Image (cartoon, rainbow over all chains, first blue to last red):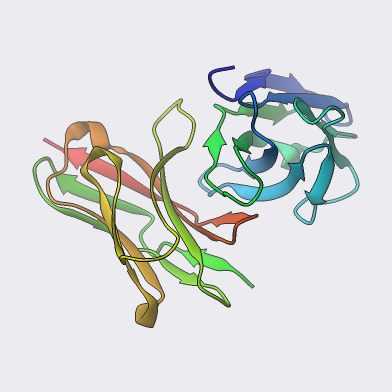
Length: 114
Length: 111
């Protein structure tokens, strides 16, 4: 597509529920990144993919968070047993080449855990 | 470890006045440096980047930034601010594979 698309744009869930956030990167972009932005903070790195594999998942806060990119294009961030502290905007970005490091961001998915 | 410090949480400038947003970084080698802007309801947009070469880099919307290795700084400047520049600005540092962001500086523009 023309830009990085993220769905849903807003998600409200209850504590303990499971959520999935989807990212559709720019067509042809091989690198894909997930960041989390809490209120009043800068984006915090979570994970990035080169192709189908997670090249660095060191930013995932705990084992409740998991991300996949099975075909090297669309990615899904999965959060199990959500907690109120997971409330944030989850940003996805893609880059034309792995190592080019110029990121194009989506508008984000705002997650609210009640 | 990599880190980015933006000392000013928010700054207010008058329309037409000059602007400088400060950024200091900690990095073990020559970093890749970036400035991004985030307007309300919009995604992060790249303003400019420094990888190597000339330490004064030009970006979009009339912004520029200067890399000063001795001061570990990469300050963003604009000679004349427009009301539409009101937004949150993020400095970022990284290597070719991973980018770390600062906490941001919110810019307010007064008429």
